[in-house]
Length: 111
Image 1 (tube, one colour):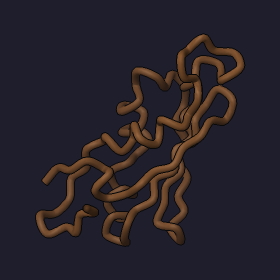
Image 2 (cartoon, rainbow, N blue to C red; image 1 turned 90 degrees about the horizontal axis):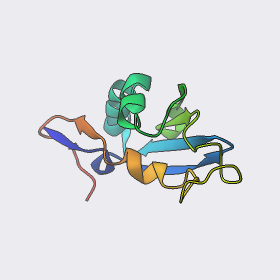
Image 3 (cartoon, rainbow, N blue to C red; image 1 turned 90 degrees about the vertical axis):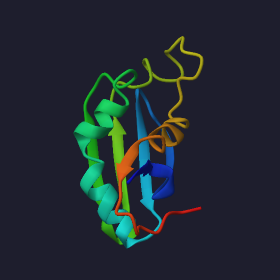
């Protein structure tokens, strides 16, 4: 079944100049297996296609059951250069949790 990523993991994010840093942490090992398989660079780039114009890099932290993504060229130049209403990366963590992922029917979902 397809569920929002928020049922599998939580996220934190911030900005790094013109890019944002999005960390996704699974609630349990089965969730980590899901995000590791399905949150590919291509999937994350596609999800943020309207705001991320640069490269997406992915880093794995299996000991934390986490993935970290750097979304280059996603903030219109950064907080001090952009005319965007919110040129900060803090909302990108919430944004990634709207992604849909496929999980088995008996998967333990977070409430």
